[in-house]
Image 1 (tube, rainbow, N blue to C red):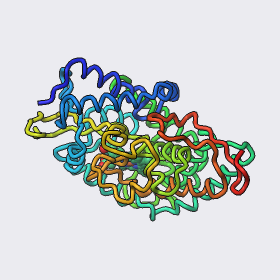
Image 2: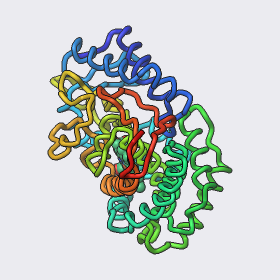
Image 3: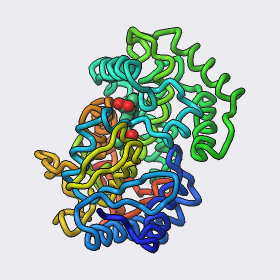
Image 4: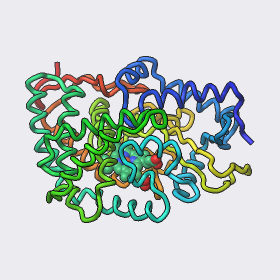
Length: 395
Ligand code: HEM
């Protein structure tokens, strides 16, 4: 059985798990992201993962920790199996996820179990269809304002982009009447900042109640043309939707930085810099891997930057390779996860993000697109891109 040495366990914690936690799992921390970019911390993480595979072979590598069975996957086929066999026997609702997410979405599908999970999963799948909302029209409307702003400033910054993005998100999710409700998403951000600390911080009951009340007022309008109009009890699910649209904005901005366009550009951005770097599952029974039994309640860790950017396996690891998405057959290139726990909003995200890329690049030419080999860590907070109207010369 592959049990990592004490030194290797320490290395996994120091270069893979702790830096991921420090960047902020639920909401990214700008200071830590800046440091991570400076040191290109994902390179060290990927190097550690390659070392594990070289030293211990393809079996899941068990970390030497007391009180918890933790297994790190290194074989792409194992990732495929883990995701396919979710949520039974590999549950999405792990202890760590429950501790973090209950701060702002105690009824979310991701931390639900059994029949309740099935019901909520089904509702999410039906509600989050791109054809349920006029996404493109909303994006175009808001992007027009941003284009004008960028034309007068000559550059696109993360702050400018993200203000527009949140207006789009609030309109798509809750309707036009929520467009300017910054307070709602600011409250959610504060709850998410607390959630980054999972077990270590108490819940902010007052703030959560205020957020949920405000959210329920918006939902009660069931504004036609928004996701809120979808029939069903959405109240417990929408906090996750608002939260996860943050990742979609980050992926869109990074796609611009790499010169990406269309849905394949969005997928590539999410492959190169996955916004869910660690996919976790917890086994509900003992399971057998490469001839070895791992006990019930083992926590399985899939560190996606390794599988997405492994230079030993992928000739395109560090370049922008949208053609790859014409037929991805790699079971471990999974920016939206896969199997029964795959992101139910994948198509909605692809439509929204690619509409934003189209709306911006139709009018603006961006300078300073990243060079290859592309960096392992990319801090979106400090991205600034010079922009000129399409048809004029880029300085
Ligand atoms: C770039 C944007 C996004 C990416 C890369 C992404 C990726 C993912 C991933 C990897 C998971 C699986 C998590 C796990 O197994 O622990 C997931 C789950 C989920 N995502 Fe997304 N997501 C994105 C945006 C969104 C948006 C905008 C929504 C809603 C509007 C959404 C709704 C969900 C839900 C409800 C789940 C839980 C599914 C379940 O428990 O079965 N996601 N997403």
